Amino acid sequence: MKGMEGRDIVAGYGKIEVLHGASVRAGQGEIVCIIGPNGSGKSTLLKSLFGLIMPREGAVLFAGRDITRLAPEEKVRLGIAFIPQGRNVFTSLTVRENLEMGGTPLDHEREVRRAIDEVLEAYPLLKDKLRYPAGNLSGGEKQLLALARADMVKPQVILMDEPSIGLAPRMIEEVYEQIKAINAKRSVTFLIVEQNARKALSIAHRGYVLDLGVTRIEDSGAELLNNEEVKKLYLGG
Amino acid sequence: MDSLPYYLQTVVNGILAGCIYALFAMGLTLIYGVLNFVNFAHGELIMWGAYFLYLAMAEPFALPLYAAVPLALGMTALLGAAMDFALFKPLRKANRLTLLIAAIGLSFFLRNAAQLFWGAQVRTYGFEIRQGYRWLGVSLTPQQLAIIAISLICICGVYLLFFKSRMGKSMRALADNLDLARISGIHTGKVILSAWIISSLLAGVGGILMALDTNLNPEMGVVNLIKAFAATLIGGVGNLWGALIGGLIIGLAENIAVLFISPGYKDAVAFVIMVIILLARPYVVTDKRTD
Image 1 (cartoon, rainbow over the protein chains, first blue to last red):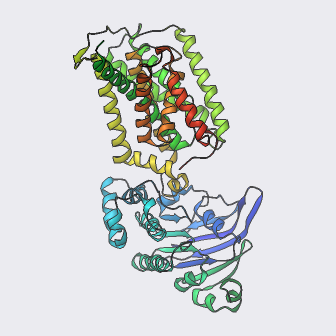
Image 2 (cartoon, rainbow over the protein chains, first blue to last red; image 1 turned 90 degrees about the vertical axis):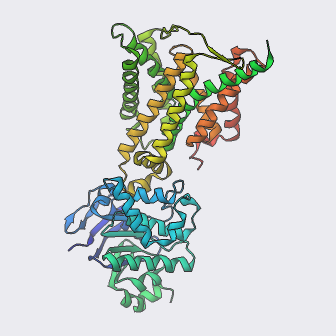
Image 3 (cartoon, chains in turn red, purple; image 1 turned 60 degrees about the vertical axis):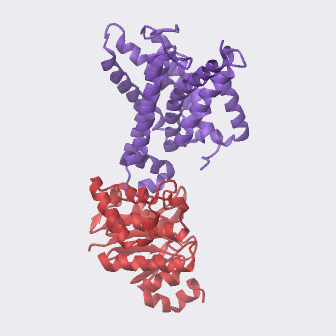
């Protein structure tokens, strides 16, 4: 399998254990969404998959290979990108420099320039803002820039933490359209953690419900949207 | 004394000193930006840089200047990297107060080591003092012209490094957001090492220029650290161009103050500026970063 998988992950902070054996799997080209209430460990799961938190137990697999112990900078070089929640652009760097930073794993400056040209084709909104500090962008533009920066090295898997948080409805549409476009074009795998469950499930192929540190329900996006229990508990009736 | 040339000379002297302070301050602010602490042992890099050149040019090595300078700068960079490796790297996750005390301890150690080795007396490189060029009543020696030229070259180098090279941009990215830098695949270890090398080189060049203009003594590091620190406070800690402007302001303020007070109190000017800023913005050393 070319996708990404987390098996029976146990992880936490200090003495507090947040995940008690959570499992998720995303096949190649799949958009998988992880929903669940606040404090259920969604972000912790995503960080454990990327190595920002080292899982205490369990395994992270990528294309069948065990990558549990690899540092984030090594995972990036394998083709896994992570887009954190909140502060996810270098605010004091220009938009162009942000993209260049995304191109860090590329060997030559020539490749970085070519990658920027390609990314700008896919994200025309950023074209006019290349020379401005990223801190001047709106929330939605920052989210698009974060996505574009991750996209610089054409990752096979993109892990996204709460892409819609704090965005205007129009920008949420824009960000999710972009996710769908990248997925369709290069069959990039997405693992998305989302508070805005309805929106995320509407584009997801599959979804998981995480509750109290374990994965409780797994189903297709459409099924989860219609699941009475999920509706009642996580989609607001 | 004709008053206009006298004032002009004061301004020129201020710019001269300010250029050197700017080199110190930019190195100090760089480490602050990347590692988020004020390296109070930065002064010792300045002092050791100057002494390394003295060592290379004195017997038994007696190297010519063109060979001695690269050697001295290389050793200063090595000292900076060693400082990080031996002390600051193991303390990477420590809080600011721990780092502050560790840096002050290191500063004492390095200063006393220099004193042990070379003694406390004042030394010079032994270049003969040449007649200054006069223009509009302002006098500048060839050495002073060289100081301004070399400082300008360093400042241009810093600009090219931080705004045109990938490594420099990575340093700025790391200073901006460490977690995001790691997530983007930046090798933080390599970038931090480069920051130490650049910071040490700036300290070494500045130290050598300062010793060239005045003299060498084991206390030169501490005094100049205070001035560099005051300069970074003026410019906003972590801000590269702020440090440059801050250095020039300190240099000018010191020399202009001499018009009104005894030259013996010249060093106090930087202290006064520093105290005023710290009274207004104490969080710079105690709390988290301001940006």
